[in-house]
Length: 556
Image (cartoon, rainbow, N blue to C red):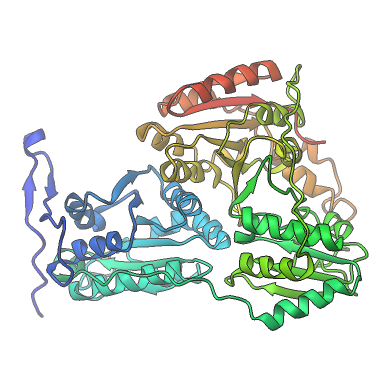
């Protein structure tokens, strides 16, 4: 049997009297492309040369060689999380605001599995994310050690590129290819699996930098055909999503709607929406099928731009899965991955050449008073929201009134949980705050969702991030009580959901104030609109993270 490769030399730590060891990396600052280093250094330098500047991680033993190599790549900011689901959600939030990828560093298959929930959300958001997943040394997997698993199968579930260099010489090339896949429109989660010996061995070569390709444009024939549909005068709905929900796309869609009386709707969950005074505001598609069917009632044509035709979030008895009316035709102006903004602008120039967009006038709700309700907490936030805030919306059943309340507030961005997997909100806030340190971040978080990734607060404190988290605490899985009503006419769902103990999280009560303080985040509790207004104003005025536990009644 051949002898296994020699592991890297470990140096005793002088700070603790030799109690542990760590790996020293050679410096690679300003490294010339083509120069040989070890595999880990080639991997990281390739990503940095491709404009990846942040790495979110919870590393393990098999990733120590990458951790050591970070010493020589100071351009790559290292952000430690206590849980991989926070790292992956933060990479998603960063990508949505920075419009470029972040990287994650995850520990073997189980570490990737911990992060898959929020990678599912990032896949649905079409966010560019580069996953680096460590693996055992190439010769070690044959012995089936305890942490051995099929990492490629797990990564393949994300439907993105998966690569695995088998020697140090391939790390740069595979890193460049992974990055290229991540930034290819519409964006994807791409994974590179790096065995430990591939990282520590010499012979790595820095890969060529990646030049992102623009999203493909829509043909003029398609634009003309859609224009003919609109000019027919038949009832038509235009559903916009993806990048079309930012300023240029919003203006174009508004022009189309104003000139033709087309109903313009926004997709249900969007990766990033620009909102506020001076911008058009469109209603979102409803969550439940009866809501969407009512929004599309009577239309003969449904045009989609940057999104897909609407489908029910879940299957419900007596409701269809496809929510486009049966007698309506669906027309794709721009498929997901095509340049939907350009297509909308060109369409607007055809059907609305002299029409101006209809924008929302500045307006803030009056400051409410009294016990917190599903309406007045939204009014408090809308009244005090600073200009250019990044709002994270994981409100679930508590946020039905948020969009209307904030429509005339100062300009802001909204990031949503796009894949339906709970626990994305606070990690998104971490990534967004790192991507835009000059902007306030307000995370609006349902209490049940918060518990999946509450350790994100620790990273917010460690990185001194300007994030204000408002926990919408109704002590219940209230959305499941709402869902119950769609099944109540059929056994075995008939019953009283309010009394079902599996939908109640009040016993024992979760003390979010103490949880936040344990992670180093100042926290307070509000039960009235006045208290929320005072605490929210104070949190916005002070640097660093804050948490407010807002007690509200659940939706009826």
